[in-house]
Length: 382
Ligand code: AMP
Image (cartoon, rainbow, N blue to C red; front, side):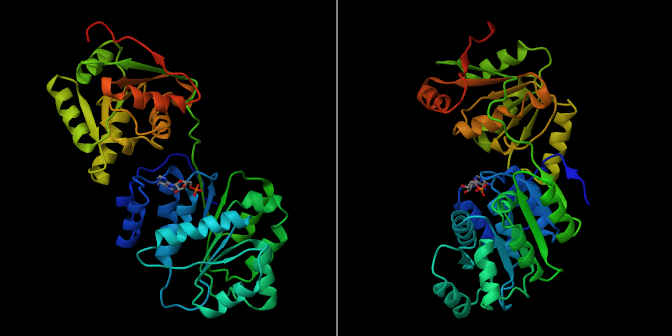
C-alpha cells in the first residue's frame, strides 16, 4: 500500500498530458488551475494507477475522475469500458453532466442507470447506442446485471464515488457483487469524504496498491490569520507595500496580483527598489516554478509576487504575510489566498490593499466571509 502524499504537487492544467479537446473544455468551464484533489489525482489516474482519494463534494473530485475517463476511452472499442458508481440519482446526473461537458469536443454520452425511474428506456439506451460509459447507483446497476441487460466484462475503469455514503446507505453488498462482474485488471478510483474500516477493507480486497491521496482542507479563514485591510486612496500601492514590508522584521510574504503582466511589473519595481523578490505565474515552465518555490520556501528570496496560480494548495510552512495587492476575484479566492499563511498552527497576517475604486468590490467579498476584516492604518513611512 502506498503512503499518503501530504503535499499538493505544483500543477497547472497546462502541465498535464491532456488532449487539446479536454484542455479546451476545461478552459470553457472557466477553470484556471486544478483543485488540490485534481492536482494530486489527475497525474496518478492518467498514469493508470489506482487511487483512493479522501475528498468531499465541492473539492472538484468529479473532474478528477472524469478527465482520465474521457482521455482513456477507446473510441472504437465495444462494450462498457467505464463504470461510475454513486449513491444517489442526483449525484449520478451531475457526474454524467460533467463527463458530457468535459468531453464536448470529442463527445461521449454516458448512460445513466438509476432507480426510481422506468427501466425500459435504460434497457433501450444500453442496446441502442454504443454505451461506453455507465454512470449509476448500485441497486439499479445490479438489477440490469441480473436481467442480463448490462455486461461489465469489458470494464477497464471503475469509479466508486462517495464510497462512505454508498456504504451508509447499505449498498456494500451490491457494490461487491457489481465488482465481481468486472475484470480484475481494471483501474479503480475510490473517493470518499471519510475512511471508515469498511472502506479500508474494500480497498484492500478490490484495489491494486492504490495511491492514497489526501488534501488538507482549506478551512475558511483560519483563526490564526490576522486579517486586516488598508485603504490606499490616491496613493500608490507599491509604496504601501514597501511600507508594510519595511515595518516587519524579515517577513516571508506572498504578494498576489491578478495578472501575469501586473505581477511581472511589480516584481521588477521591487527589484529596482532593492527588495529581493521572486516571481510566479502560469506562464512559467514547471521547472522554473519548482525552482522559484524552492528558493522561496528556503527563504532565499523573502517576497514572492504571484498570480492566483499560487493561491491553492501551496504549502510553505513559514509564510508570515499574504498581501492582496490586487483584490481577489471573490470570497473563495480570498480564502484560498490567505490560507497560504498561518499554516500548521503558526501565526500569519493577511493584508488587503483596497484602492478607492475597489471599496464596493471588497465590501462584497467581506460580506461572504465568516469574519470581519479589520481596517488598519498604514505604517508611517507610506
Ligand atoms: P465537485 O467536487 O466535483 O462536485 O466539484 C465542485 C465544483 O467545483 C463544481 O461546480 C465544479 O464545476 C467546480 N470545479 C471543478 N474543478 C474546478 C477547477 N479546477 N477550478 C474551479 N472550479 C472547479
